[in-house]
Amino acid sequence: MTHSFLSPPNAGRFVLSNATLPAVAVEGFDAPATEGLVKADIVIADGVISTLLPAGAAPVELPRSDLKDGMVWPCFTDMHTHLDKGHIWPRNANPDGTFIGALDAVRADREAYWSAADVSKRMEFSLRSAYAHGTSLIRTHLDSLAPQHRISFEVFAEMREAWKDRIALQAVALFPLENMVDATYFADLVAVVREKGGLIGGVTRMTADLDSQLDVLFRAAADNGLDVDLHVDESDDPAAETLKAIAQAVLRNRFDGKVTAGHCCSLARQDEETAKRAVELVAKAGISIVSLPMCNLYLQDRYPGRTPRWRGVTLFKELAAAGVATAVSSDNTRDPFYAYGDLDPVEVLREAVRILHLDHPLDTAARVVTTSPADILGRPDKGRIAVGALADLVLFSARRWSEFLSRPQSDRVVLRRGKVIDRSLPDYRELDSVVGA
Figure 1 (cartoon, helix red, strand yellow):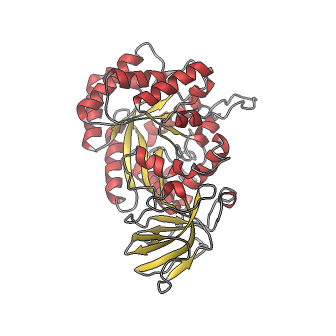
Figure 2: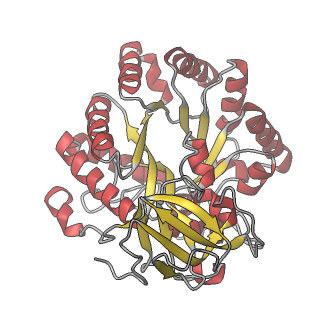
Figure 3: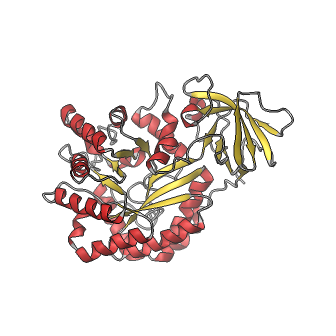
């Protein structure tokens, strides 16, 4: 097993004493907070949090682990990933690190290799990594050009069943909206998504047909009871305003399902008034926004021989201030859209704090990988510490933010239903047979 900083009692009822909790992820417990962190004793019984008490107040007769002010977090939610693309980098790397280079490399890889066995092998590897890091809820986008939509959604359904007691899984169909012109394909795609309990998604582009495309999409979603999760304005072009068009389409169609938009990079390239109007429309339409800071930093503003001038991310603080539900997520993992990553929300949060300046103060920063994405995904039972909730927790030796954000927390302990899990990460060599060394 991976080396851990402590070993909680292997008992039916025990205490995690003198713990430091992110207050934003704690429900039903009041205590003085410093930088959004509170002290508590957590009593766990039969895999459930039975009591939250002031630090040092738990019954002395119970077995315990003294955290010595170490942090305890709820398990994480990673709400925008691409499990079907994961780990193809050794087989098809991005030749120049650009968005177009990524599109071309993924297309070539998908057409050559993405059988059910290939997708399944790589998806399983990714889920094992995410589980070891402490994630309990994932939404993945699945490339859904025909015939891939049937292959990948079938693999996903099998994975969702196999992993249901470890990671809750959701899937979104990812395809270019212009492909809806093929009515037979689109009807089949919607049928597959509905059958597998997924969401309809897509890539939006500034075209003369965008409004009509969005109307078709939202009508199909409404008719089939589907929520919507879109890739939006992944560009440094200030003229890319599909986010505004999506908000207008939600309002125009009176769509009452949940709508999520990912990326929204060009919003940060627009002038203040243009961006402000878009943010107001997004808030009015009730759209949730997920930022992918690591992937966008990697892809955006990349030109040969030129140092990037901006960070590639959306107007995260302005959206949150307007009342928009916001979160951050991993996005791609070792594929042409992002050459790195390991589906570790601690890394995502650490980098998001730096890239998006989610600090000074850090009081509510923990929400972006816990409560906020869980709520956006319709799982308010996830991402929080509360009496009656499952003891799905991540324990850290770090006592305060400066310690937490300065190291990768490789010695963390993950509890699922109050039991320590094996945090050993899968060896990349396991993938050599499908992607090469």
